[in-house]
Length: 196
Image (cartoon, rainbow, N blue to C red; front, side, top):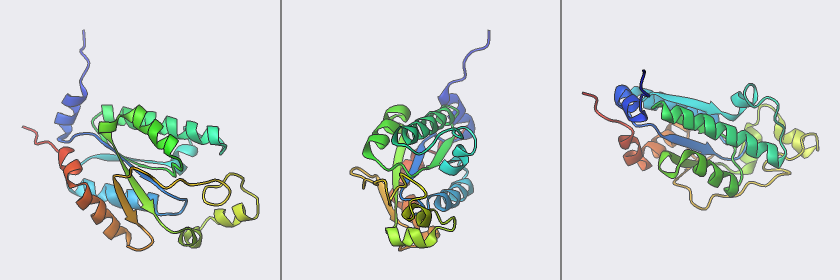
């Protein structure tokens, strides 16, 4: 009879310890761009990771969900469950979701586990986010065409217990990646194990 391969064995095989790096912030704050750059940085250090992006999940797994408060929470709950599965497989997850409320962040922590999640607040001033918005979603929200849009008609709660904060409106993406890497050096180093 086959035996279950433990998370520890998978981490040992990959030479890393699985974690979830959860990037959150206003729409167009730079979460997805930062996630891509961070993945490249970790890959260059031999760390295998998987990006979970809000837009990507809404195009597939969460396609049927709308943007009411309950549906947003369900969107995040599903994302957290997927992230947890990747962690169990020994893979580092970089999640990029708006995650506008403290209640939602607490839910994520309860699903993934406090030891396995690190929150990164991708902070950018609202006018900067609006100027960056190539899809024109902020403009549509201000015209009333998109209800419950975070930052316009739906609130974004500033984090109370953020582990890391980067100002993506003040620094280029490369600098933000460096800030994350520096501030969570121990977290990253804990993610890497020597195999052998």
